[in-house]
Image (cartoon, rainbow, N blue to C red; front, top):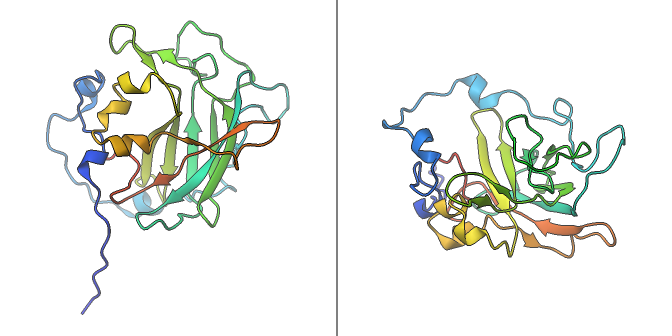
Length: 237
């Protein structure tokens, strides 16, 4: 008889719904018909091969390789672990991040917010977890910005995360927030997650051990991929 391997099922309250009335974009993005399960082929489940050799790391978002300058703003270090539902490390996972600069503007042509661009700020980076599931990168604390969801709407300071498994079909997306941000209680995106404890898992924690003397404050942000303690993900459904 084959052994049945159990796993910790997720709590649906920890994940955002497809449609949230307060988050206006979900009215256009959410499906109007029940989803269809499409079988994955070998390409979707095992390709491409995500390795630093093919996808070089960019662990410092505050400068470019040519050393032409350094980004303006509060320099910070973000580190943490990628874990499964049993707290076991997920090694060699590719973690991509992107964010606004210190003035609250993305380095993207679609962002026309009336805030200055920083020519020395990358705005995106890529790292891989080590054998114990740890990742680390250096960046600038992002600024808040208006987003026109409703009157006088501003997004809290946040960093976007994309985590890849063995292939494109194994991709999860989430956001990391900062402690003490006064915009969090009124942010429609943050509050799409029904459970308060799950929302708290989206907030990084200040960490003195990650902080480097006279260099940068450190924040820890762990990501749990599955189970009851899973980190809320934007594309869970």
